[in-house]
Structures are given as structure tokens and as C-alpha cells.
Length: 318
Image 1 (spheres, rainbow, N blue to C red):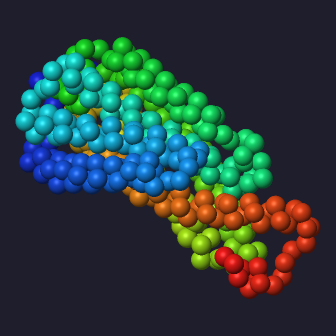
Image 2: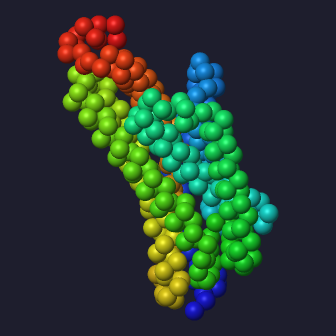
Image 3: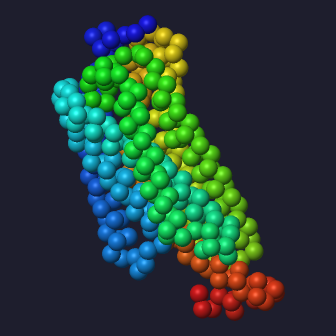
């Protein structure tokens, strides 16, 4: 069954117009404000560039590009008119490319944090600014290639209106995005975050000098993981359900409801642009302070082969 735009279309009506207004406008304002502020902090207030700073800058740029598509998407949906085909493809490509760029960069930050906390002595020999720069370039190349392949794979009549699929032909490539662009990063981030949390909690029991700082770092790691799941899980569940419904030729009303769900899920995914700048700014300040302290203590411990029992004496200069 192939349902064309005139027979099976998602309109949304007043509820979705209201949702767009009360979500997109604040997201645009706060997204631009938070990310530009974060960009200013990392560019002007950081004393030196680190691997974390580089990944954060990459994430901020991707988030700013995502936020920049919001006015065009809001206009296309509220006016129920289509943008020029070339402009629509450009806006859609910028949105999807940078959504997955954000996911890949968040994964890289999680892996970088895992190496720094689990292997503090070897971290500098394993990770460098040059390697991080190459990693970011590879991410951009992958995302650009994916967008080109996706545009070539989708037929011209699939999206007669910008950001709104008008037929029920399954897009096989969408499942590649779900697996490579979400499931694998989710597994990697969950593994890295779990190991980091375990390491920090062990240090909490062994190091009574700054238990509050360690606990705060654990909360930040958990907040980052929860933020990632909340923002990106719903939209990829929606893509999967839509693919299954299209493959098994579900009735039109099911497709309309799935499209509505995906629309809401995309709004939730957009909120990640605001959360990123807040969660990872605090992560950069709190966790890395702990990493440097942990590295120094590990070096001292390795040199002396003796554990200091008098905590107040060792903490008097901290």
C-alpha cells in the first residue's frame, strides 16, 4: 500500500501549531544564547586548548547549526507552505547532519572522559589535540557523506512538504541511521559512563578528602547520560516504528499518529542543544578538576608506594 499526500497527510492542526510556538521559540532563544555564551567562554576564558575544549567547541558549533534551522522549520509548518526545494533540502541536511554530529561528539567526549579517569597516567600519551582534531574531521566527513547518500536514496516525491514525509514507502537507510547513529553511540556512552561512575565511586570510599566533589562529578556523568537518552531515544524509536509500519503496510491512521509522535520527538531532540551547553560545561569544570587531582595523587602514590592515612594533612593545601 502506498498512500499519497492527498489521502494520508499529517496536518497536526492547532495543538501542534501551539506546540511548535511554545517549544521552538524558547528553544531558539535559549539555544542561541546558551551556545553563544558557551562559545565565548571556551574561546575567551579558557587559558589553553585541551582535547575536551576541542570536542566541546565541535559540539557547540553543531548545536548552533541545529538551532539555526528552527526559524525555517517553524515557518514551513505554521504557514503550511513549502520552502524552495533546494532550501528545504539544505535545511533538512543541516538539521540531520548536525544532530548526528552532536551524537558522535558526545560519544567522543564520553570516551575521552573514560580514558582520562580510568587511565590517568597513560591519557596524555593516548590522546592529543592532533588526534582529537582528526577525529572531529572524520565525524564531519561521515555526517556529510551520510547526508549526500540519504538525499540520493530518497525519491523526489517523498517529501513534498519540508520535513514532512508524504508517502508510506519505507526508507531502508533510516534504519542504518538508527543503528549507527544512535544504538552504537548509546552503547558506547553507557559503557564509558558506567565505568567512570564505578571508578569515581571507588575513589569516594578511598579518598575522604573531597567526597562532595567526587559525588558531584558522578551526578554530572549521570545527568549527561540521562540527557542523551531522553533527547535522542524517542525520535529513534519513532523512526523504527515508522519503518516497521511502512514495511508491513499499516493503515493510514497509524502513519498519521506515528508522524505526530516523531514531530514531538524531534522537538524533544532539539532540547539537547540547550542541555549540551549546560551539562558539558559543568562536566568540563568539575570532572576535569578531579582528573588532574587524581592524576597527581596517582603519580605521588606510584612514587612512594605508600598510602597516606592522615587525610587532613594531605588536604590542607587543597
